[in-house]
Image (cartoon, rainbow, N blue to C red; front, side):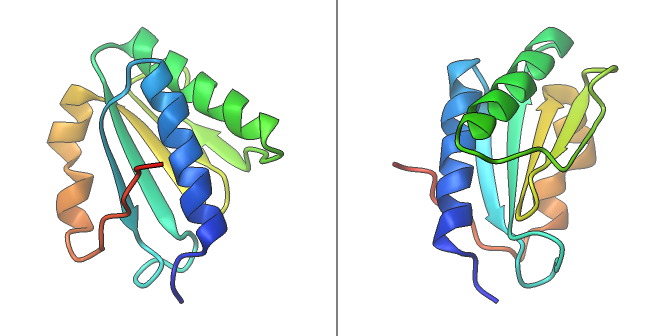
Length: 118
């Protein structure tokens, strides 16, 4: 099932919120084909734990303003990799070291990139 326009717009809004807190290297992947639990993974990098937490908080706050509630959140205490589940959109805010080590883009290499331009 192809990714919905609503989820793409939600990913774009999350990307803007992440960039507002200096999120870097944003990549959105359409995982709707191999992963039935979500449509898009948005990955964001940050240089330190405090920035990871700030980006994650801003994404949650901005999507909440759009009427989207967080379904689950993992990793806030450590601040190295925070996963925020919004249903069809899953946001991974990662310390740059974790992102390089785990290489999510390599794991989902066959998934198309979703353009985040507004």
